[in-house]
Length: 414
Image 1 (cartoon, rainbow, N blue to C red):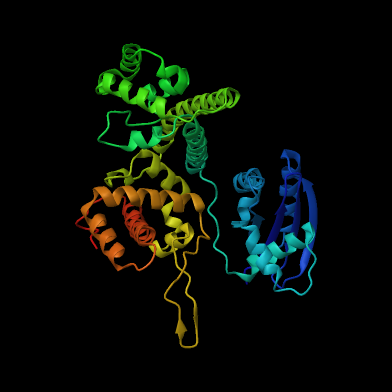
Image 2 (cartoon, rainbow, N blue to C red):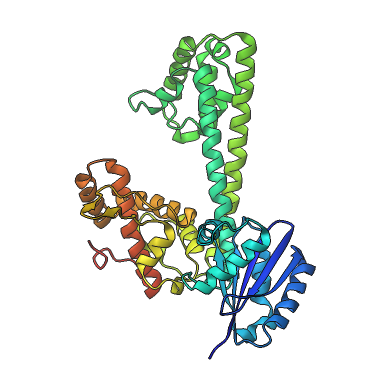
């Protein structure tokens, strides 16, 4: 009989609380160590003594922010534990919380949580996590960094647009009007120059030739009809709200700061895109063969999936991404409206849905699939069709990564 020792580790910023459990559910040993290199070395030495009479180790860690990651990497890399062929389990705190409900009136303490983690993996319904692969780990760090930079840029642009409305009523609407000579992008270089250097009052009194010359120099050959744009700007300045001078000055200052922040963040994004391309080159993948998926989205998808071999099917991958729908059925009742689970990897779900939105525009097979789902939906047509398209894309991605082949729409048709 193969003997297994189950190890539950409750993780926090300052320390780790450990509980080892035998196969019959009895707590064998407990330990509390600091969350640093010395504490990890102490834990590894202690585990080796605890597992002296068993054949196998199953180690579960509560996945709490980033506090568990250095411990996970250290345990997975240490040669001292490899003789037990350890299996690793990363548990979301919600799983531990849910498992606690199987006990009656169990206290919420760190030692109790360590016991529950060990018991949860002993129960045997959890999927083991692969040992950290430095290629995927490095790529995941930079892609998540870029994700959060992009979210910050979006928030800064929304705040800038709020100030812009108070200072230049109609500026954004005019930029969206294809029939009017104006900037195509509110946050383009020429537009930012005007918003940074001028208030509506100042621009209204500036000669048209001066304005046209400035925006032509900033916008370059791509900027069409700078004289007409200058006239549109002056008409817009004359229609702008007339705020009190102090408020105008404060809002202008805020707008300029937002624009400066946006330029800085976008510069950082360009730098991190180079790091993403470098790290992605170390991982074999064929996702960029899908028309609409570029290096950034392919890197994000690959980084979050990790080694594709850990997923037995595309259904398992979709579940990991949270692209599944939870049934609601009782007796003869079966609800038609089934909400998305959203319980999987948030980053992967984001990349798959965003990638699907681009692929459905460029690929005929996905475009036809999206159109059918859009027509068949009763409520939330675009959202429903887009998420279903992302689910189809998940199957295609699973096939490409599993077989390491290029995308061919005829082979992956509906």
